[in-house]
Image 1 (cartoon, rainbow, N blue to C red):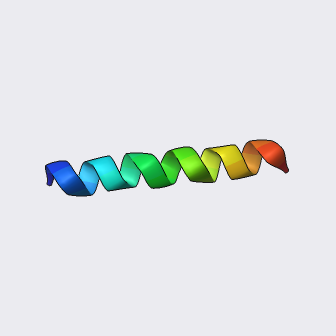
Image 2 (image 1 turned 135 degrees about the vertical axis):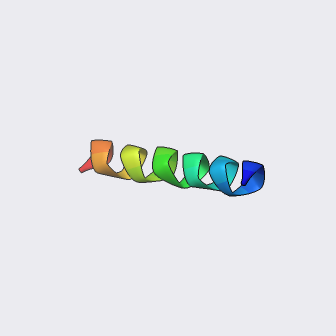
Length: 22
């Protein structure tokens, strides 16, 4: 679960950044 959570956080950050750009 730890690794999954870390990956999810990274993806969420990238998604948020992409949304912020748009």
